[in-house]
Amino acid sequence: MASLSAIILTKNEENNIEATVKNALQCADEVLVVDSGSTDRTVELAKNSGARVVYRAWDNDFSAQRNFALSQTEAEWVLYLDADEHLNHELVKAIKKVVTESLPTVNINGIGSHNAVSEGKLKQYSIHRKSVAFGTKFSYGVLYPDWVPRLFPRKCVKWEGKVHERPECSLLMEKLNGHIEHFTYKNWQEWEEKLCRYTTIWAEDAYKKGKRTTLPGALLHSVGGVFKMLIVRRGFMDGWMGVCLSITHFFYTLLKYLKLYELQRK
Image (cartoon, rainbow, N blue to C red; front, side):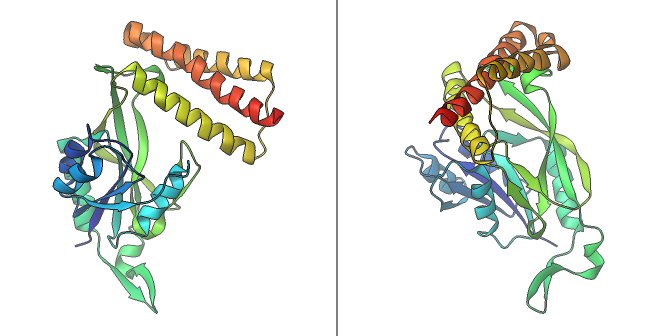
C-alpha cells in the first residue's frame, strides 16, 4: 500500500492548526507542516497534535513553499490542505480508497518511478471546496463552492505562481466524492490583512512578468470584478453578506492594480 503525506503551510495559525492536523490524520500517514516563522503557538500545537514541522523562511512565494514541502517527504502521495480546511467523512473515505488501491513506488536505475502496473492508472484528484466566512456558509459570489486540485502522486506535481498558485501536473484529473470545508475570514480585520498581503504579492509578481496597467484600466478591472461576483456568479443569492463581499471585491481588484501602477511609476 502506498503512503500519503498531508501538507499544510502555516504562519500564525494557532486558532486552526490543532483541529486541521487531527482531521487530516484520519486519512494521512503523516501531516507535514511547513511553517514560515510563526510567532504564536502554531509550531507547538502542531507537534502536540501529531504533525511533523519543518521551517522555510517566507519570501512572498506560495509555490516555493509548496514545492519545498515535496522535498521534505518520501510519501508516494501528497494532499495539500490550508490550515483552515477540514475534510468531511465522505472525502476521508474517498482519499483512503485512492491511496490504498495504488501501488508503492519503486526505483528503476536509481530514478524514482511508479511500477509499470501502477503507471497507467495514476491520476491527480480535484476536491469540492465549500467556504464558511463570518459564520456564514456561502454558495455564490466571491466564495462560491469550487473544485481545487489537491491530491497528487508526489513525483508528478510542481507548483507555479507566487499567489493564487496552481499545480502543474500532466496526469488525468478526476473528482473525488465529499468536500472540504474552508473556514476563512473569521472577521473583517482578518480579511483586511489578507487583502493587503495578497495584493502586494500579486502586484510584484505581475510586474516582474511584464504586466502593466493604467489608472483607467485599474478602474475598469475593478468594476468588472464586481459585476462578475455580484451578477455572473450571483453573489446577491447569498443575501446581504454576499452583496457586501461582492462589493469588497472592487477594492481588492483596485488595490492590486494600483500597487502595480505604483511599481511602474517607481
